[in-house]
Structures are given as structure tokens and as C-alpha cells.
Image (tube, rainbow, N blue to C red):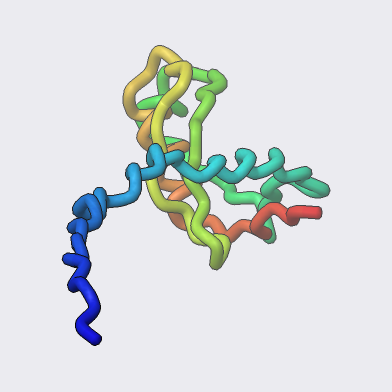
Length: 110
């Protein structure tokens, strides 16, 4: 007995398409750090005594100079800038020289 042969049709499956790329989402940035609480500001270990220039003493010059001082973590002054001049260059420089030789207690953070 002969059976009829039935052709088998093979279909090629559709080529696999690459999975759709998920959109890239940047991670949420970390919140900014909270401001630090300063429990004690910078203080002198010993307040410096500026040397009064002879020329200013002879002329009777008295004044106030306001300085901005950058203090490092060891309490040593770095940059010293004049915020408000006394009006007398020799006295401004005497103030800067005194502060450059000072030692500070660094500030404390909470």
C-alpha cells in the first residue's frame, strides 16, 4: 500500500527584531548637601599687635583697616586682603603683616 506523500511546507520565522531600546533615563541627581552649621567662628589664639609704623606715629595717624583673612585647616592665615583701607598705606600693610603672623582657632562645624 502506497501512501501519498504530503509535502511539508516549512515557513521561515520572521527575523528577530532587536528589542526596542529602552529610553535612557538619567539617574536622579543626589540632593545638594545641606549647609553646614558653624558652631564657632574663627578666633585668634593670640590677637596680633600690629607694629605701628614710625611715620604714622610721628604724624599722629590713627585708623581702622578691615581685612579678609583666609584661614587654613591648621589655623594659619593664607590670603589676606584689604576690605576697607584705613587711608594710610603704611598702616594697612602693618595690619596685614600682623595678621599674617597670627595663629587662629579654626571654626567648628556641627
